[in-house]
Image 1: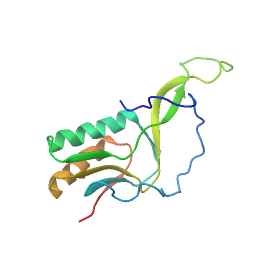
Image 2: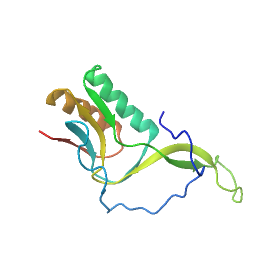
Image 3: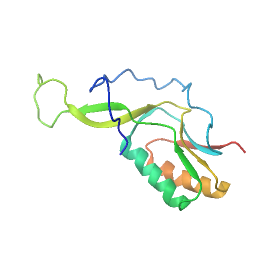
Length: 137
């Protein structure tokens, strides 16, 4: 799964919810011809990114090129169940990437429009948010 090799600080604060803000970086296609764009704010886990990647590569059957434009570098901690207060912050459970509306998640190049749209439609079902398929053509 995707996770950082090294970090300056092991645990991170949650941060404030920015649901109404739009993404300013990573909103245009940079590498491929077709892309999958997020339409709302959410935390995308490393497992969900991997599920989307597997769905796309399985649908394309090793044809074309795939770029993953996001990386989960935010650690999320979790305490075991039935633990009382005062034990400190829990251990790292998984990694997420905070996604805002407009962010490009995946890009594809070297395949036909129909195959790219089919692959992105399948991958979009694996993600916990509404997505939109965009193209340069």
